[in-house]
Length: 250
Image (tube, rainbow, N blue to C red):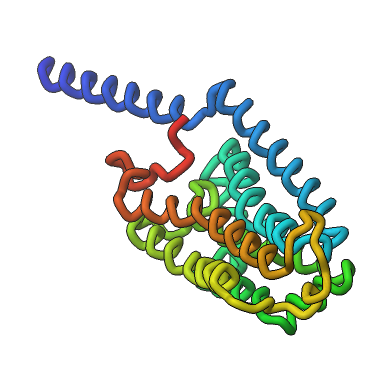
């Protein structure tokens, strides 16, 4: 009886210790909290600079593309990294209800992201945003929202797909249209958007060269998403734990 009691007490002690370690691991350290705040501040700075650049879309296609890509591919992951300070259970509970839950659905966010990546390359959509800054601001807002919803599929606080290889495949599939558009811009022998035909950009280069630079900007901006896909496909982000995701290594 005493041996059984001792074994039971030892098991309880071990369980309590494991629980305490798990709980302490979930509490962000002070350095992690600082990192989260810095990520949010950096995201807000990126948003501010991009919004400033959207004021004059005709000045340079490369600059305009850089502003859109900053809103779509740089600011969203920085903001979402800041959300890691929010407890996972509370975030998932609040995100699963109402409109936020619908928007965070992987299929909805992916269709929105891919659809906008394709639509923004169409002259009927892109040309008005170049000719009038009133169209540029809504397009920038849509780029930010679509990027935020899509990047949320890869972050711990908002991710709903638990299998890393599925999430990695989603990142690769979602980034393909953006990569194709970038290659078309870089390889096209003609200027694709009429507002730029008779404009010398701020860098004193021809519209065709400016378009090629815009394609390069979009291609480079899409590389982090592809790297996240590789990270998850290879299972590097799991580190032996199915619930440990990219950005959870503090």
